[in-house]
Each structure stands twice: as C-alpha cells, then as structure tokens.
Image (cartoon, rainbow, N blue to C red; front, side, top):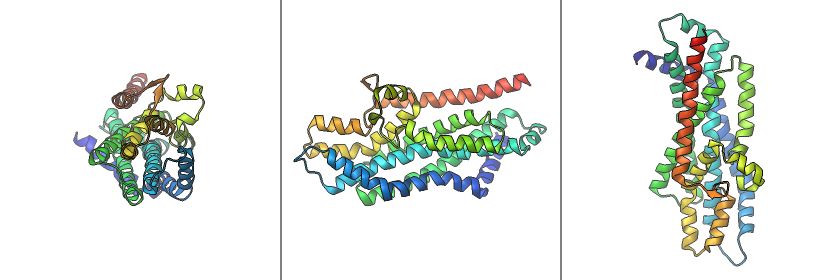
Length: 298
C-alpha cells in the first residue's frame, strides 16, 4: 500500500507540474463554458421560446434556468471523459520516454504501477471536474437557480461516477498507445466526437431513429442524461407549478434528453445508475485483464 501511495503521489505531482498536460485538461471545460455563455445560450433560448405553445407565458428567469442547466449538464458530461484522457497521458509519456522500463527493473510490481496510474488519473480528473462543477453551479446561481440540496448532491454523485467511467475507458484505450503522437490523435478524436455521441452537443432526440437506437447502447448517453435529470429537475417542477400541460412537459423533456428511451421504453434513473456503474466495473476489469494477459505473454 505504501508503494502504491508513493506511485500515486509521484503521478499527481508530475501531472500538476506539467503545465502543458494540466492546462490541456482545463481547455475543454473552459472553452465549452465560454462558448455556451457567449454563443449557444442565445440560440438555445430562442429555440426553447419558439417551441412553446402560443399563449403559454414563462418567466425569463425560468427560461435562463432551463437553458443554462441544459448547457452546464452538457459541459460536465463531456469534461468528465475528455479530461480523463488528458490526465491519462502520463502513462503514455512514461512509455514513450522509457520511464516505464526503469520502473520494471525495480522491486515495484507491474500491478502496483497500473493501479498507480489508474488512481492518479481518477484523482487528478476529479479535481478538475469538481472545480468545473463548482464554477458552473456558481454561474447557474447568477442566471436562474432552481436546484435543491438533494439535486446538487446527486449531481456530485453523477460527476463522480462519470469521471470513473472516463478514467476506466481512457485507461483501456491508452493501454495500447505507446507514443505521444498516438495519444494526441486519440485525444483529438475523443474531444471532437464524444460530445456528439453522448448527446451533449446535440440532443439524441434530434437524431434519426436508427442512430438513436445505436446511441442507446452507449454508457455515456446515460451519464449525460443522469446529469440532466438532476440539473433540470427543479426547472421542470417549476413549470408544472405554473400549470404547464403534461403533454407539453413530456415534449420538452424528450426534446432535451431529460427522458431517454431504449427501443421505445423510457429508462428510469436507477437503471441509468446501474448501466453507468456496470460500465465502470466492466472497463476497469478489462484494464486489469489487459495487464494480466501482457504479464503472461512476457
């Protein structure tokens, strides 16, 4: 255990000491927050207002709360995974620079090294994502706050689970990478594409039925939906208090992926948690299996 803690401490120090690696992990949440606040917010507001039935009035604060809750949910959903890939770059750098060979000639076991990379990556990513969450909640408070204490606690749990999912996924993918060029290529692909396939940049409900069915098999879809459920529960409760018809509420919830469906069946929040937690265990198990098979091969 002491050796593992030393490895984790070493990896964390290198991550925060490496300015390029640390700031690259902050690029996604910072850029998305600026992009959402300056450009997409206006588009979302106009789109949301135009979708309301005629004669149905809604306070401007509630519109702001709805829009920014949706945008912040998307930001957090993307950041938890993309930041994990950035934090996991240290494992690839050690391979590329030959540091991993120096470790293997020491009494430190390979399993300890693997666990050290995993725990350090998860820890550094959690620091970044929870910092982004604090900034986002502070910004939401200035726009339109409708969240309860339980909503905030559930969002914390959602971010924690989604970060572990991102860490497990990135650990499995990065296990096969050996050069910094490969890491950059994979990081670019993940940063550009993950937001679309998880429903963060565009609601899955806006895609075709065939693509919706494909995306319903991806764990990231349910991670995004979980955050939206707890970020937007308050604004939808306020709409119901204002007398919004149930069919209108269902249409709005479906349009922003508050409700997600698996082959026509609405997926409940407990099932979403089960899928996300199961995915964390699955990819963590694969990461362990990869190391076991590599050890046997050698």
